Length: 269
Image (tube, rainbow, N blue to C red; front, side, top):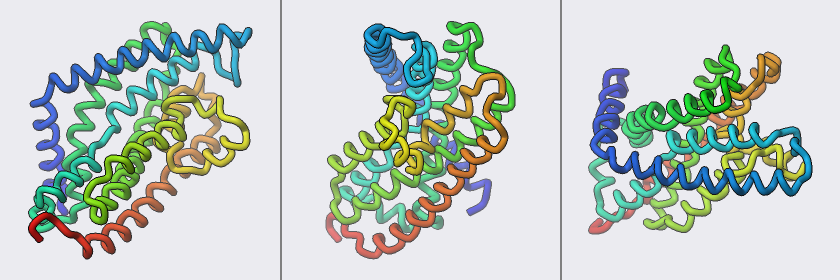
């Protein structure tokens, strides 16, 4: 698949996402309400703890982490499972499989355009607001460059997780329950809803090796380093961790898809 075709699919995704500006606005409003609830919840937690620092994080550190985690969730959120389910039920997936490109590649590049728009409409404004409110508490240096690299790998990992679950649609046709469970597990074990620093040591030791951490916690840890405190060895370790899961999940996803697509059954066929 040529670069020109990939960019064309991405451009189509961008144009499509721009047609649903109201949806983006409603998402932002919903996130605002969510963040207000999170603010008062964690304010109560810190007030009851009797200390300014819990598990090595201040209230400000926790709020910055959770606000940016929500922003990352917004631009990484894919609806591949829902799309797959609808395509199978309507039979549209047959047309997609006949396209002169691999289905997984088609899904990745056709959804990436919307993610680019979401990045600039949700994450970037949120980051700027956080910087202004906290008076530049986030260090601006090479960590931002490394964060962007980490965010790209987080996107690949998130896509592969979604595709693994979406492939199950080929067997069940409807995966509403499975997808809800998947989203809950990812949000909980990735640090998107509760920073991993607050996890019990035993659970955190297990979660540290799971791919979910590579979606939110690793990019945020890289971005929120203070004055370059992340040593190069630790930084390379986190990026290497993400790269390893990119490769593992991609291979697993391709093998699972190639095996499962042979058993596809759609309405009327």
